[in-house]
Length: 120
Length: 107
Image: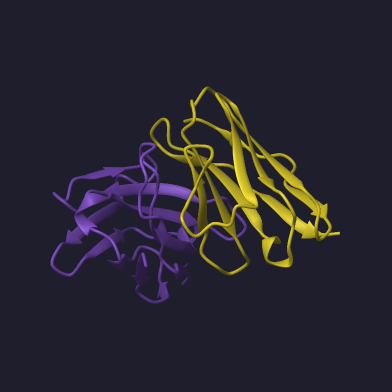
């Protein structure tokens, strides 16, 4: 069974940095990109970027590229997403997920989500 | 970025109804389209990729169709567990983008 387990809820002050982990299981970890998606309250999901667990290469969305860092720990089958210079608009649930990248079959899964609240 | 539009934003239906949920892309995306189901307070669940291919654990009452700019998710016979918000997402062009969702409510 494909599973992603994320770290727990966070409360941060404006200007702080949050780091979220996502441990994957049930498939060949290095064979599939891991994506991060932000979903603010009542809003559509928004793609933040991806990391290739095989070599650690990243691609970030333009909106987040100045503030986001994604890393991988291959032995631990874990990816990390760090978002810095937090502001109130970053209050959201953050998901790790495998998304379709071409039209080949892939192990579909989503983490349970990590709520992040940014408030002074 | 490619804009994904889902209209209506909500619809009401009864148990047993056949429901169709449309999705439109601002430019052609071939068949690089996925569908997700999300229930309140839960993570999305991946239903379909490549417009019409169901993931392994998705029941056959779900189907997808379309190509180019216009796509449809169909639920053949609506059941209580299907009341949720459904999102489409294109992955033809960076960055991947999601539609605004269609909430399926009980009539």
